[in-house]
Image (cartoon, rainbow, N blue to C red; front, side, top):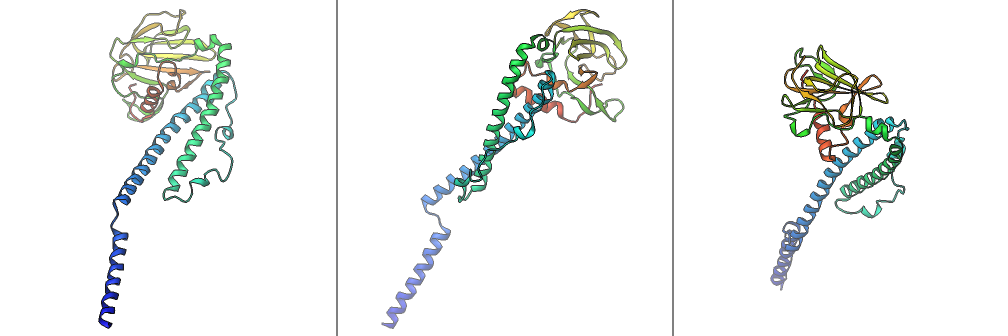
Length: 297
């Protein structure tokens, strides 16, 4: 009996050990499936977070243009940051997402979605307000620069944008007051808004150039042209051919140097390409123009 009892006890002990090892280290087919689904779900949440981060970048750019360009044009006060960044009330809003293995990433995703929804709501109302103002200022909207001065399909490689850039000749960092759009010699150049040609000729640095006064404090400058087809004092319309890309003046390659000047101060021209670029194209242009590189002039 003692031997039998010992044998049974050892067998039970071994059974318990094997069961523990089996449950702890070896997954059942159902557990394996659940783990795969959980891994896939976590991956989807991470992809979603990455996409939401990109959406946030686009929204931030829209908000910046809205406050400092569109509202500035119509002399409307920017939207206060506490309204733009205002969240949803309720400390227990995400309570139902607690207690899960991936609660942290789920709650973070929910917060980002709420922030995007809030930002879109505020931005939508802002655009409605500005749309009403724009209808009352149709002449101003026709004059203000709003398109690219050359067709985007003619761009050959990376643009050099507004801001601090490496000078191609002096090899030092200098403030670049416009955007360089590299294109083949002879590429058509178009007026970006209605206005009057106030300067034309050859100027040191810019080579063959034109300047158009659009009124309302806005001017545009087109440099390094091969030739122009309008004259000083002539009225031009948005989209009208005014000249062709060249390589004149202080230039290291065929391109158009384009500036937007507001109240005597250069501003970033990319902000005024909104009329003929899709959101995706605009984001690509902003990214390309923000790279620190060497200018062409």
